[in-house]
Image 1 (cartoon, helix red, strand yellow):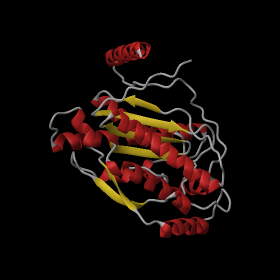
Image 2 (cartoon, one colour):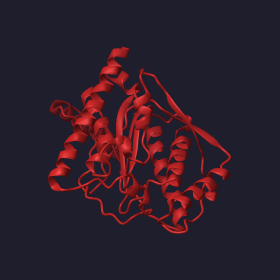
Image 3 (cartoon, helix red, strand yellow):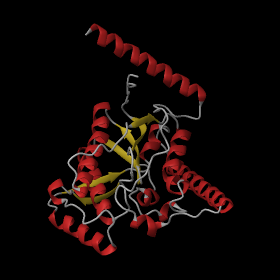
Length: 302
């Protein structure tokens, strides 16, 4: 079956997700946080996209970004995938590693859809029974920055060392103690020469859907997002109580081994549009078919 074309539009909000074929590459260790945040900052140093929200969880990555340019956006997530793969190969002492399945990058077409996607991103740890609340999750996410941003153009910036591949040594074992984790992290940090600024704009996406939004607009939307997150986390707590389950918890998450064996459950078709509004889904699918037909015609002419 031929690969579906990917159509990235400028000045459009996208939810980008990529998953590991098997195993859990995103362990909640200090050395992994150092590497991942350094990669994000390095790849984003030339403002390929506007990063609004992100979360690295177990086997997959969620990135909600505003695309500025089609090629730059594809370069953004392509470089992130490659640099993560190369880093994990160094940590495990591997020559070859086929880590990822295909990337899903789907448009978020309306304000309500955007709110739902942000809520979904931050409730992932609760949905997957990792932690009861997003603030308890010890992995890499933009939650702290999102809660501190109040105005439309607030830039929550932080500086991160760029951990180049020669600075990454093979782990003594896939499961490290707290002491080993600190030593590995500090050894890599001490070798780093360059730093890059990671800029997160948690609220700037609102301007794509509301022209000249007021401070009240921004505040109201953020309150709704937090309220929906809390509602979903509470529902998950009730579900776990009824089934006798418990969350894995931050302590056990931090102790998980790198690339712990895991088979992803989600193997469905990749999507390129996601909206609660049927008429918008139909319109976007129609537009995509039209673009695909033009691409086919151009290819045949060539």
